[in-house]
Length: 253
Image (cartoon, rainbow, N blue to C red):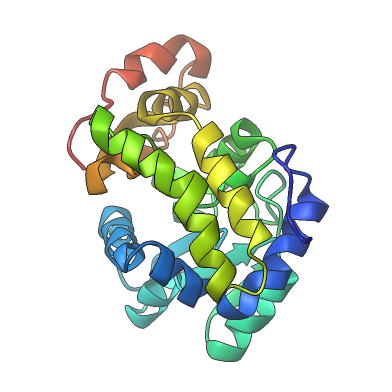
């Protein structure tokens, strides 16, 4: 069995993703019934990067999430802690800058990027709060954060059906098409244990980000959170302003 635990030890997680790297994108497309592409388009639109700007794409894996930025002339850095994922990505897209790194100790200088984004990866970090603080550190004043993550369906009946799919159908389907079906049991468990939309928004605000907002996709299966780093001189005290920033939650992206 090559499966990480919910303790989220970086060595276990990296080994798990190394093992699934060759078929990772294909399996995700099948398990999401093709929805991953729509979700990723929404992330790119929220980042709203322009040619020549710098974007840090965390948990980039094989670079699928980084490709739209590179194709648009954006200077994207695809960062992941799985060397196996990065190797697969570099073979596919040698033009993209792939960098090995831990989200809780980013290998970048302060104020380096106009935007930082992470899709379906914050849930796998052992210290999400520290990762959000690191993302704030490397973002330029006035820069953006966009986080896409699995979340909690807003309609109770849909939530029940989705939970049943996660815990029963998803591992069974993964067993037929994945080289490491046990990793998708971890996927289901980690989604079920993850904070809902409001809780994640509060965590982002508490890490020092401003203007926190989120948008539900696919009935809340996924939520895309957006936030902004304060302009120079306007940061103030992060803890004192967290509740004020959190009031922006649920505004439109």
